[in-house]
Length: 320
Image 1 (cartoon, rainbow, N blue to C red):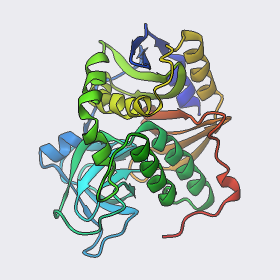
Image 2 (image 1 turned 180 degrees about the vertical axis):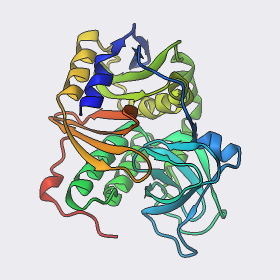
Image 3 (image 1 turned 30 degrees about the vertical axis):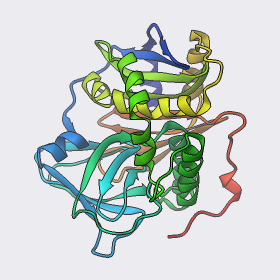
Image 4 (image 1 turned 90 degrees about the horizontal axis):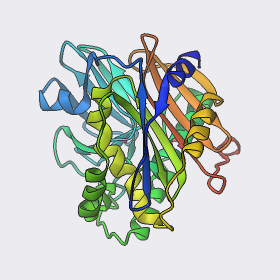
């Protein structure tokens, strides 16, 4: 947790930008560095990585990732992969070493398809929408605590997608998260235009209708800039679904959320790839951080909200 606290102590909040019920506070740091890895998108576009089913039959909660290049590759929590037998999202951030092949834990975001569309997955350049990522983060933490496995509660993932589809009046033949995004692409595009990365920005804190929803931090401003548009879309989808009074968040509430992350309980696990996984939990808070080479490569923390707190400590994990 010391690495996280050191990272957070070097952050400062910039002036907020607000648009149609969503407020974003930029986060700056005097500790950021040049990235020494490729993002998943970069690696796939350069044909330096591939993602496939683990076998001809496939397994819902696992995919096979192969880094074919000389540089590490960063997979980020919530990244959507499309193709093969069904679309999936990555369960937590993973830093994969050069010329390394590993199985990665994923969740299905297309309940109505189990038929091969392609041999390999491609990046949708989207992230799972924030409210579902928050629930998934808590479920993954509980599963890791109990068994060391990095699986989500798959039924809950499907339920979240079904609820979001209903809230936003989206019909999907395969109950696909992709269809939700594509149905509202024009509106989400306006959000992406409203929020742009600033020089030296390494993260952001997101609020909807004045209520803090979550925070994302990367070790590099280049990595943050690469992911900002999909993060904005991820949080904006919640804004479209809620559409409250449009109240803007205030700085004191943002600072309180950062303080709550500092005070969160952090459980440490050896990472699947390089570094360590730190799982964050606290009063109405869930999240995780990937730490490698004494730096936070990526941190995501979510406000579960007083009305959305889970009680998985007393429930049974899903068995695949």
